[in-house]
Length: 99
Length: 464
Ligand SMILES: Cc1cc2nc3c(=O)[nH]c(=O)nc-3n(C[C@H](O)[C@H](O)[C@H](O)COP(=O)(O)OP(=O)(O)OC[C@H]3O[C@@H](n4cnc5c(N)ncnc54)[C@H](O)[C@@H]3O)c2cc1C
Ligand code: FES
Image 1: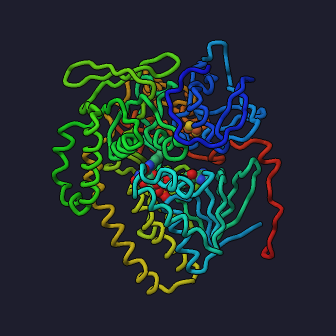
Image 2: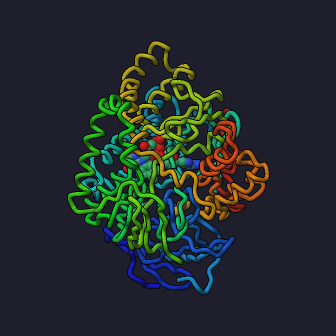
Image 3: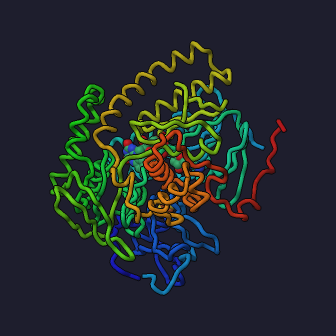
């Protein structure tokens, strides 16, 4: 999962610890969660209920709902959330194939 | 229940300018925006970001700080992170903030909900790694996150702006795959007069293009048959140009072929919309003050038809003047006198639009995609599915929705609505107005039970 990210981060602020499907990740505090996950090398955010197809952020403005992730059992748009310490993030409809 | 003279939905240039003008004329204003900070799409997060990356983003971006400053008025309450999901008559607005539902009442309403990027369905567009170009720009602007190995695909001024910003950020795109052709440019001659009135935009455009080509970014214009390859993520873009096939490997694909009004809130109020042939989208029917066919509901900015950020700002001011006039804070003469300058500036801003619309038309093959291409991202309905529903007798999007769920997912048709209408127009021979658009019903965005349970409707004021 720690593949080299296709994204480069310019800002270099304090980071906090979160988990993604139980794995520890360190993300910039207060950053946009979808942006921070992309920068951390996470490309697939969920799989679709219809065909199990992989999806990741598409619009970054709260309109497409492709960035859905689960936080505390609630499905939310990662691009509309800020990173806070201790977030426990799950990827909906995850299966073994998830990279 | 808190009641204000005016509720503005959207804190982009239109909403911010309107709020400032209305407050100056003595109205109480509440501004709701789902983003964590003011700015809208163009000036996203400008107060925090301008000192960090203002140089990279340019003066057109940092201008936004003059508008966010206008929100610092005692009569304006700006609620950040407020997702509006229902608007009921005369006017009760329901929204969620910090996971809790809330409601407020308003005498008048200004919808300043801006634009969405025109959906660009092509093979592979649902793969992770494929995003809108605006999304790429948001990553850069708001988060300082840059795509190292990206290809830009599509057409339009915003595509060049984003490419130029990527160049300045030190991560130029690997290539530009452009869908406009020489004949599109040739067809713009009759709009050149207007374009020359907006010559500053043309000069800016040429400078952007120069900055992109100077660093050696290849531009492939007149591209067709564009597809994205990959299994679990985007790996390459393939396309044809002058009869030859090309393939460019990449990690990220940014798609863009223009922006269209975000009409969800207006449609939920049953405001009449008509098809705009030049902009190829539906726009709400408004008078010259931005007043809709529903008394008390105004619309300004790109949500009223694409005019760009400065046009949005002037339209916001103009709407606020009429709102203040209706609320008897302003005489008719005063209103007209104050409206003269923003009206002149608005006309000037709009002069360049017909040229831009003609020079950078949407990518034809994404307006009428191949049968196998997914058109509804949420429900994974293909263009062929929609055509087969048309074959079964469906003549409008609400019928195809009932047949095949296209438009029933969480995005509520934001990224398939125009496509479904276009396919049905093509299949039935009806006009876009006859074909129509999805009926939009609240909630505009999904609401959880927890948000409803925590609903804050307790704060009645003296008026109740
Ligand atoms: C992704 C993107 C990037 C763009 N970048 C540029 C650029 O760099 N330069 C440029 O000239 N033009 C850009 N544009 C075009 C640009 O949107 C406009 O010209 C300008 O921002 C329009 O201003 P506006 O006030 O009409 O709307 P916007 O600036 O779009 O503001 C609308 C606001 O409404 C809010 N909103 C919408 N629905 C709801 C709801 N239900 N509840 C709460 N809030 C809501 C949104 O969060 C947003 O902040 C961009 C467009 C998009 C879509
Ligand atoms: S990326 Fe589209 S809603 Fe988050």
